[in-house]
Structures are given as structure tokens and as C-alpha cells.
Image: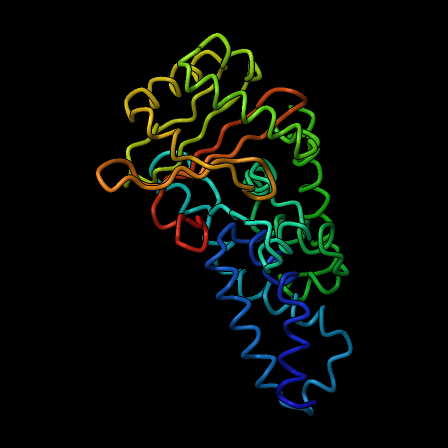
Length: 303
């Protein structure tokens, strides 16, 4: 297998591997680092070593998972030290035929889904992502976690229970078609532009939650805001403080496969913001606003 053929074989699985890394770490940067490291390891195997690999996709998947494992296991401690609500690094896609579009199409990476995954223990997360979402056998997952297969089955079982509980509580609503999401988003933007609190309340689920991730770097709410009325008043006040240009410059984008807004940076004002709604039926169940600069790299928030 020549160098070009090796690279082509790896490129064939790139989107899948990025989806593995992102679902495990919730970070595009960490996922890309893991995929790059996996490529180097695959290349170093040499022709003889690669010839012994019976399932290239499974080998690469387990390699990326092992590389992400330290990040997954250290995440709970890092989240405890995080200032304010935490949100995953957003995946803003352009609709072009690029690898990020393929990542979003290949796996459920909605913000609501990623937040539910954060509630799992590290081993539960690895088990349910690799087995249930990505189709690895339990013995392959056991090799990643370095534990018995029966233990992996228990991790997956407990993870599924937590996911089902979140769905039953309304925190993980069924996906809504993009046109319906866009209709709700457009109505929310119109209500904000008009500073119409009652109209905004009507567009939010009574138990809606707002998370603003500023990471202690950018001014943001330090706690999750819960309740339609509180969220509506908070958002209207935020837009009024920033000025009408905040919404005037915003443009619709897809964020983790859902309808969202990119609010570009103002040289004299706020940093860029990526906002995405989790729509449940015809109302927003959650509003997520990512404001932490390091999560809004040029590749994450295109201009």
C-alpha cells in the first residue's frame, strides 16, 4: 500500500473518527488532535503492520478512543473548576461539502445530547458512545477501558438508563425538522428585536433553561437561568444593553446540526457569540449561548 493509498484509506474514515473524538471530549480541537495522532500511529505501523489489521475502521476508532480517554476521565474535575455554566465547543457548519458537515450528519451531536453525555461517568460515556452509537463490540470497548467485557455491559446499561431518564424529563426532546427549528428561531429573533417579552415567553417552554458559557472570561450569567419569563427578560435586557446592531449583524447558521445564530464580534463591544436553540415541538426547550473565546476559533465560528 503506497503512501497515497494509505492517506486515502485514512481520509475515508476521517469524519467518523472526528465524530468519535467529539462525542467523547465535546471539543473539536481535542478530537482533531486525537485523529491526527491516530494517523501518525497508523502510518508508523508500516506495510506489514497495516496488513495485519483486519478491520481498519475499528482499529482507528479504538485508537482515537484510547487517545481521548485521559481527556474524558479528567473532564469531571475540570468541569467542577469551570466558571459558570459549561457548554461543548460548537460545531458551526456552512452547508459546504466539508468534514464538519459529515461529522454532524454521522452522529447525534446536538447540544442537548452532548449535555446528557456529560452527566455520565467517563467509563459510561465511553461504553455507550462506542457501543451504542458507533457499533463497536463490547470486547473492543473493554480493550479501550482495560476492564472485563461484563463491566462494559454494566457501564452501557447504566448510561442508557440515564439517557432514557433525561428524555422522559424533556431534556432530550426528539429531533425537530430544520424548517420548524428555523421558524422558532426567526420568531425568537423578531421578539427580541421588538423587545416583546410576552411574545418571547410564548416561544419558550415553561421549563426552558438558558446556559451562557463565558468561562469566566466574558460577561455571562454565572448560573443556568430556568423558566420562560426569566429567560425572556434576561435576553431582552441583554440585547437592549448591547444595542440593535447586535441582532442586525447576526446571521443564521447550523450549530451541531440545529438552528442557531452567529453574532459576530464587535471591535468595540462584545466578543462573538454562537447561539443555538433546542426546539421541542413548536417551542424552545433550551437556549445555549457559547461566548468563551477559546471555543469560538475561526474554524468554529466562520465569518
